[in-house]
Length: 211
Image (cartoon, rainbow, N blue to C red; front, side, top):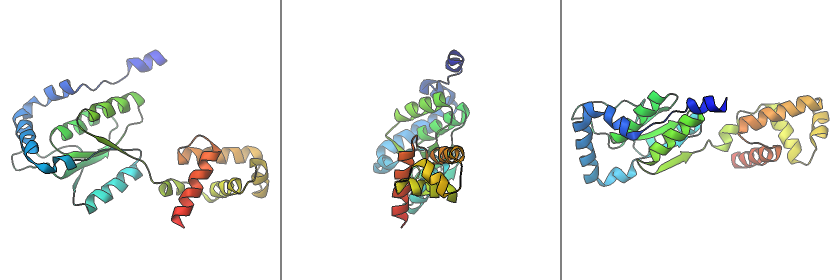
């Protein structure tokens, strides 16, 4: 099975991408020349987001800073199109999406991209993006992740934070130990952590910030 997964591994070669973009080579070359002459090229943002919520938080900040946001990876063709200050936003779910996102960067735009679930594609895309500039990673705000928890999960984590064992917390909420374990497992998955201790710390810190 591991060998099969390796066989399906996607490799995004920037040389190949550039070859595929030769139909627009002159336009890309003129944009590259323009970018070298502009001091604001250093402000182009290359961001990978851990989730859609993290992506939207980035979009909100970029819009406040005056960036032009475009949903999707396609740049408008033609000499009048100036990608400076433009940020393309979207999810990278397939190799085709990854190529389009990288071409947008080659065309002069910034991007905010949610990485794919496919580990191999995610790693390849991230490495190729790093070759084009500094990449920032946007994590989902803890408060946003906390919103994924239901009242029972939050109460369980509160009781653990107060020093109760899982068994005692389960009894206080009239749950079986097995049900409490399942609810805590779901809470860990929602918060993106591996242990109950991490979940407690994250939930408590997020609640403290909100308060």
